[in-house]
Length: 128
Image 1 (spheres, rainbow, N blue to C red):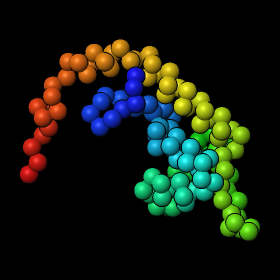
Image 2 (image 1 turned 45 degrees about the vertical axis):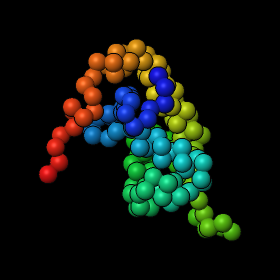
Image 3 (image 1 turned 180 degrees about the vertical axis):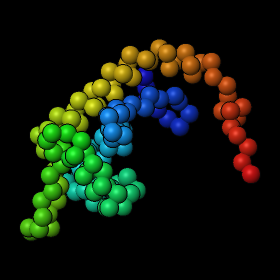
Image 4 (image 1 turned 135 degrees about the vertical axis):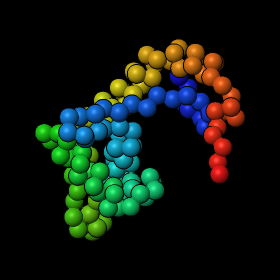
């Protein structure tokens, strides 16, 4: 399956845990951005969300598992920051691999759906 553009079909993977907690593309993207930026705030900004929203998602992930996903450091010369724990790194890698495996497994089915779907104009709903 190729990278999805604006008009291609794509698989969206989400794991639903008991108790209404979920792990999907948003939290996976947030983990990757925290790893890349070293900051919850910067990761949130990159996703167009407030620091509070990003922090709440990190807190939710840290309570979803028996080990923390993200550790934050306070103060210091650089003003603190955040990093994925070893468990968080493994979780991110496994979720990305799961997404890739699932996408490859259904590539032919998505191609078939794309071939047979109506043009975008026919499926658009009128806007008032």
